Amino acid sequence: MLSKVFLFCIIFIYIGFLNADFKPIPWISEENVTFLTKWGNKGSQNSEFLLPKSIAINSNDEIYVVDTGNRCIQKFASNGKFIEKYIGKQKFASLKIAKFSTPVGIAIDNVDNIYITDVESEKVSKLNPEFYLIREWDITFSRWRPMGIAIDGYDNLYVSDIRNHSIRKFTIDGDPIANWGNEGIAEGKFKWPQGIAVGKKSRIYIADTFNNRIQRFTTNGSFFCEWGWLGSRKDEFVTPRALTTDSEGRVYVADTGNHRISVFTTDGEYLFSWGRKGNANGEFKYPQGIAIDSTGNIYVVDTDNHRIQKFQGPSSTNIVKKSKKSVLITNLAVADFSSKNVSSSDASIVADFLRTELVNIGNFNVVEKTNMNKLLEEAAFQNTGCTTTECAIQIGKILNVRQIVVGSYSKLGNEYYLTINLVEVESGKILKSLDHKVMSQAEIRDTCKILAYRLIE
Image 1 (tube, one colour):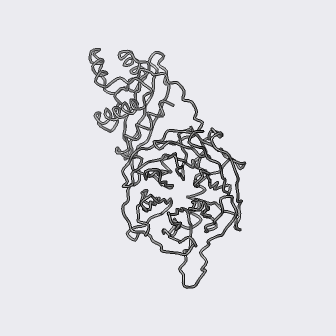
Image 2 (cartoon, helix red, strand yellow):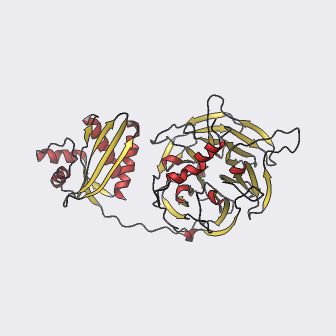
Image 3 (tube, rainbow, N blue to C red):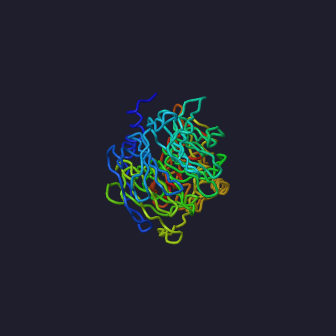
């Protein structure tokens, strides 16, 4: 079993190295939220924290904070006044207790029972509102690492398993119902998924942490949509760790590595963000938990500042959205890619994938493949994979487009590589040069989607 020190390094410290090259956007759209109060500092006494990880709210708007470094749960009033602490001590000899090694996730059901995930002991504990243990469970058929946890409107539990890169569904008594996902970047696959939220109509949202995106599912695990990729722009993430939804259905994401909270519609349309790295009011340092009470107040677990911050959330009518920039529609073509250690037909299919993704985005008038081949055939030009600027200019002039994408699809060992250049036909200037490593051909469609969005940045 991993040591506690090593586990803490994985969960809390490694993120700093991962994010070292990114410069988050400082403070966006703070007009949508208002700072109200904060509480906590580093320590082990009541109202002090050591790397708190997550947060949940009961039916009385009382706040429960998973104080991971101190291995306890602290309970507060909505104004931050300390109520009590649960550290696993036995109140009565006849009652069982839950002892935590590394508690990380928390959820509360509609009768205020409390569910805690412990990533090191590999257990989920169910406690009553007085913190008496009702039961504990793990999965006896394999090893797992439970992290995030959420409850839907049908009293089903969803737990993220970072060891197996999957989501596990249980009854509230711990009986397994289903699981889905494995490691990868394709739709429905994950890489260290952590936060889980259940929105309106029991929509399931997953913080796919090391794929730097959010995925949405139905309650049976059917994929619906996804958004986000690695970066610091408004609709990008760096290791998002937690998320929640409000009464309007908006999705609030703790964008941990960018030290901010970003808000989206149910389908992933960006609304607004707030926060930057720091320790002033409204600033964060690796936030890893978020919850919203019955009146719309937002509570953020400001993990590396060892505190909780409370904000007044937006109403349904006062959201200030950034106006969208007008987009100049450009005529563009995607030439068939050259192939290296793969078949030319595979390379052509990959070019088709990218062409389709660019059409779906809508920022280009993309030449259809059949029309492109017809024009090239009429010009007696053999389109068998174009990589050079000279070739790109020649094809671009035949097709009468302003820009053209050329590239290659190759294999080296067990890994695949997709390299593309966006060329301005008139000047021959390479406007963008992108490449992406793919671990398997099953992930190539998602890679094309990523590259298509990077082309329009």
